[in-house]
Amino acid sequence: MTGHLKSAVAESYRRLSQLGLNIGSAGNVSARVGDRVLITRTGATDAIDADGVVEIDLDGAYEGDLAPSSEWEMHTAIYRAAPRAAAVVHTHSDACTALACLGEGLPPFHYMVLGFGGPDVRCAPYFTFGTPALAAAAAEAIQDRTACLLANHGMICHGRSLEAAVATALRLETLARQYLMARAVAPPKLLSPEQVAEAQERFKTYGQPKAGRRIA
Image (cartoon, rainbow, N blue to C red; front, top):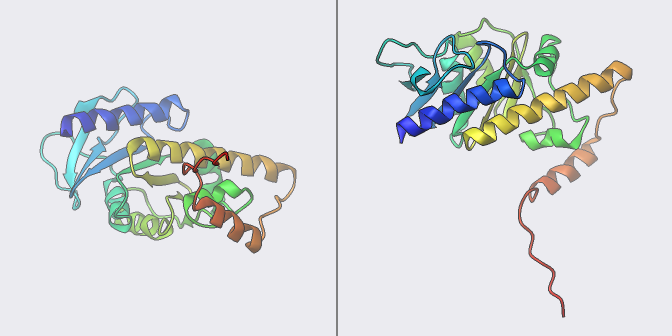
């Protein structure tokens, strides 16, 4: 089981590169197994395979010669803050990082922003990478959300599977790019509180199968 999941973590990291969300060793991926976490090694690149995935506990302890990503503490902090999360993805994708370098979150300019769990995607304040302070800030910003931005850094998100977490990262990057494109022309018109509330209600059944209409 662990070996298979290590391969899946490595594949997800390579997938981020293929999608243009990661360049070089800029990001990291992890998956949770009970009270253990499988996370990409420090300095991982898109050549990573299962041997480059490190098993740690929630306090960062590991065995062997390979050290986990320097951001392991941010991953474990998010697992603690979001007990239902099964995977975490962190990237320095272009649009998310550009917006984060403005110190801004993603407002409700489009109804799909609500798909991250709330009316916006927050931006955590800047702290040095790989520090407990950054981990705490990210965990706070992502509360009740599946994603947040990291000021002057990038983004981080979680999902109920590796596939879901990668998809969330891609969706956030797409929306951040669309927001910046719109803002380059004029200030985007944001959804009103009433429109947000109506869209949130619709999201409760978004993606759920619907019963067929009976024909008399």
